[in-house]
Amino acid sequence: MTKQVWVIGAPYEDGGRRGTVFLPALFSEARRIAEACGGGLTAVSFAPDEVAIPGLPSVCGIERHYVLVSHGFSHFSAQAGATGLLALVQQEKPWLILMADVLPMRELAPFLAGSLKTGAITGVVNVDISEPERPRFFRKVYGGQLYEELSFRGENTAIVTFDPDFLPARATSAPSREPETIVRRIELPEGGLPEYLGSFSVPARDLDVTEARVVIGAGMGAIGDDVYPMVLELAGLLEGTIGTTRPVVDIGKIPRERMVGQTGKVIAPELYLALGVSGATHHVGGIQEAGRVIAVNRDAYAPIFKNADYGVAADLRDILPELIKRIRRAKENGEII
Image (tube, rainbow, N blue to C red):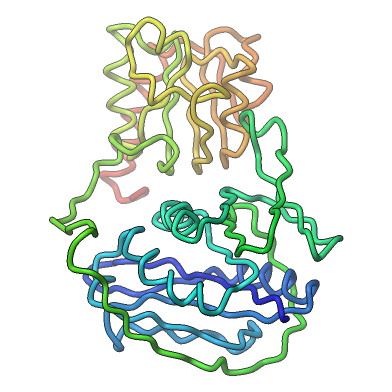
């Protein structure tokens, strides 16, 4: 029996427009796995109506494209997605289902796995298909210091979410073909699913540290009564959110959910600005995937400088007022947005 690999697209909503988005790199990875096991490749989309059905590029080598249409997908939820997928997956019995490890797929994967009485591996960063019958999946643990190796047992459909930051851009030898599009209208049950009440924007400073593009790390050197207000002002100017270290959490200055590190949260912002952060090993373990790290600490020998792209040995009381003034002026002049 052919081992089918499915790629589930991620629903999105943008300014009233709704649809499904696929990551090209995820298709490439799915094609690599499918070719190794001698299987085929299928895409699955969610759509609130026929107008929102996405077109897929022919170069991906997708054989079939299932489109699940239901008004219940107008405001997508993991429960609705799992309910809509369940009958199709039970009928077709794909060997492997791949999703990007993004919201709401991060929620959909365990819901679907529970409905199918199978397993799900989330946050995968690599897969070894040297043994196609039993691929091995790897994800980071302990703040990215170690890799965990996992595989599936049994014949049930396996579900995996891939971390988009680690999806390699692979060349594919797949033939160019137009996939067969199969539209299925789904009637979701009236009760038992979340009710959509509305949506609102979250200010950047209130974002979870794992979701923010910019994180301002406030260490023990940045929480004094004369310094911390400037840290908050800087975070507002940079549209960033506040992260912190264990000592700051231990004294109750900043809530634990904002602690970054091996025993806190692992983050991957575009910019991590470490202010008064010493750079203990367990904290540094949580910022390894940050795009750029800039550190300011008055101790020129602080360990954080060994893990920063740029560093300044100075007192925050001297640095922050001038930095805030310059950023504010640049924004007013339209030099930065």
